Amino acid sequence: MHRIALLLTFVVACTDDGPSFGTPTTVGPAPAFLVPNSTVTCADGFPVQINPSFPQPFTGAGSPSCTLVTYSNVQPTAAGKIVSATIGVGPTTGPMRFVRLRILAEQSAGNACCSAEEFGEPFTPAANGLSTIPLDLVMERGTDEETGIIFNDWIGIEVLAPNVPIPGVWTNNGGADITLPDYLWLPALSARSAAPTQNLRSEGSYSGFVPTFNVSFAPAI
Image 1 (cartoon, helix red, strand yellow):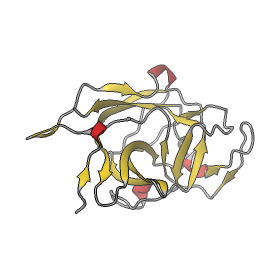
Image 2 (image 1 turned 180 degrees about the vertical axis):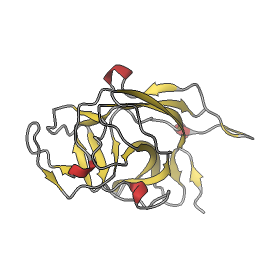
Image 3 (image 1 turned 90 degrees about the vertical axis):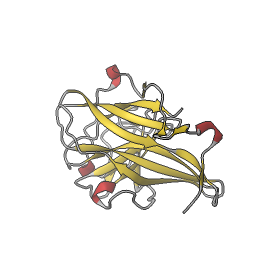
Image 4 (image 1 turned 180 degrees about the horizontal axis):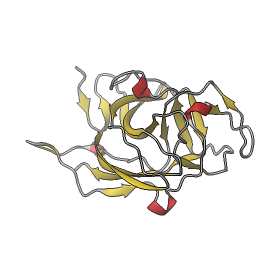
């Protein structure tokens, strides 16, 4: 079994009952910004994003489900626990789930993303509004002592129906914005394997897509 040494900046103070967590705070966009404008679905495939705005060509056959994780400001930057997420969707809704994903980093090879470590329960958010989904996702960060590989956990969203828009907004109306990359898998990782899955590099990406959810995050203390 690998011995995990937590990074000094992410030390989890443990009690006999397990790790302790501080007061939750909101990470990610404010509720006023959780209004999606995207109509892109898992069934569309991967947008090529060679045009300055929509319409964009797509590649791939699409899928009945997909998993998306973003580099945007929804990601906690410390160890802790996500206790809930608030998500905004438009007029078309359907089944979704949140997922805890793990990204690995090695100096000689760079980042490798991601494995699905834990799947949340499926839910269907309310159309044309906000829904708050209870979660219990412990987000870990650390370094494997034997390999030196650094790991940290991210939160992603899975859409579990082919014609339900992936909830989010485009910063450039579909045009590329390489400062905001996303990873995308078709079909969803939960449709392939139980957690934890194998580490699987993204099969495609969005550029400039910001999911319309935030999280209530309690840091480890």
